[in-house]
Image 1 (cartoon, rainbow, N blue to C red):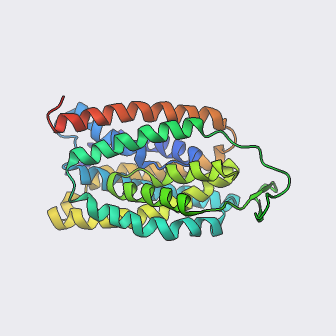
Image 2 (tube, helix red, strand yellow):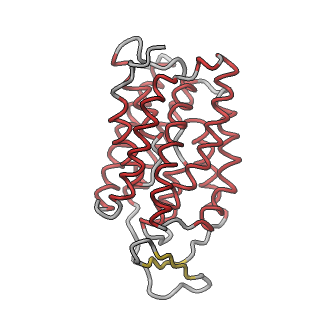
Length: 290
């Protein structure tokens, strides 16, 4: 195992983790296409052995990146823990089920699912404009407030999470376990659409993602080790990814509020469209249609 092979992923991981922290999306949504689309272009020694290896590596990397981001947001006191728990009690078990199902599904289906999901998310994120926050709570809603470390108070209605919200959470969690993307994007979109300020929504989403992804990645790694032993895990890639995302996870929260939400929203949407087209092309090639 050549431990100098993936040296370039250290700065890449810093940038990806920083963007993930700012936007609240899962870093694996960007790492997975890097592993699948970019690595094969670099030479025959770069691609990972299987799609599950790529997915599990992306999720392991994301776990460390969001752990770093969690520390940053925790210090800023922006996490709504009660709200995060309401989401995680659904996302964690469903993500594990998705991870266990990934091993039984053909690669083309996994890639096609990723492409379809990010295509839908690109539209959702593009249209996800921040609502005006009312000065008084809506009928039947409880008013929530958080005071961050700088002394700023964030006030908003406590989101009502009904069957539709939990169904979306379950879908995002299942796809996270299967193709490494879903729960972060669904959570941040759902919370901002329900009036949670972007800073609180991103911070809360980070906690939801790190716990959900930890259990999903554990399930995937167990499958990977059972199939190929500990050497099946690309440690020579993780030694660069993990320090990079730890650094990026600290940078992102410090930049929160400095980057326009609309600019970030549009940028992520455009990127997701590009990734959807590229990943669908790979899926079609695997079944001989391209």
